[in-house]
Picture (cartoon, rainbow, N blue to C red):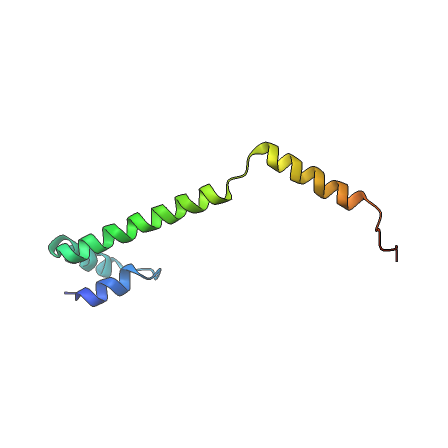
Length: 84
């Protein structure tokens, strides 16, 4: 049976797990309230960070169009410091 420290390490990493290791993990989480709560909190934090990232990086279509127009304008404008 896995120990709580091993569960924390497994839950905190992205390493792929074998079928046996997944079964051991699920069994431990079913029996250990502390690790089960830890796993739930990690999941909540992961979802929260994903949602926060989506909110902070969301750009409306009008903003995309304005940025595109600005980039195209700057690209088409002659070099002000002198053409080489």
